[in-house]
Length: 322
Image (cartoon, rainbow, N blue to C red; front, top):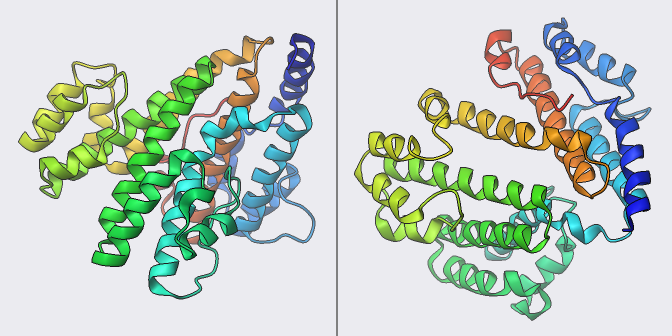
């Protein structure tokens, strides 16, 4: 995009940012009397379309609206692939398991990947991974062989998840965009921390940890693995020497608290893009902001639907972009 195209695209995004949900509205949503009231409040905000009644329908439509807008503003959508690779690798896992079990399971594929799910399924079904992008072929073959010959679904997932992280990290750097590369770094680092914590708690060995963790710049993979083989306290001690020292308290609290901390960190890092009018970054930030508010609304709706206490739901709410 030329500079003047950035200016136009960013100005459109600035106008759309005015309709993003803020903390005040989320509080109203949280304290509303019922699930139905939540849906009506969202409808009044323009969420969903006429005739759509369920939460999942509304959230799906809102995600579609986001990508439809971005497609209006950007000719080459591949710049945002860093956000979409995880969907491709999820679909690869789903396709391998579907072929292995030889059954049809509805709604197992995610839209908004860089590859159509039916093409991934066809590649697995025909055992021809040459039709997949180069960054997927090796892991697809290895995971396929593991699943079909050993039935080890966990190892299959680990192989694919590691490849997903490596792809996100590498493509984020190759994008040449600071926000995308920073997002990729945070994504991989957060995943590695989760792997370390879960690995220690489930007494995983060095082979598993080395296979599961991907390299990133902000964490020393070898030191994190060594800590995970030692103790939970060793993991905390190592993280305290890194830029993720503030995450330690959230990790001690609960897995959901750490997930919330990671999401809030991303929002914190993208907020400066509000003042950038000459690059693709404000559009990327808007996509992340929308994903963040959709996730937050899902948490509230799930809480209402399951009659969870307000304080329990509030603990899981994310920081907003606006």
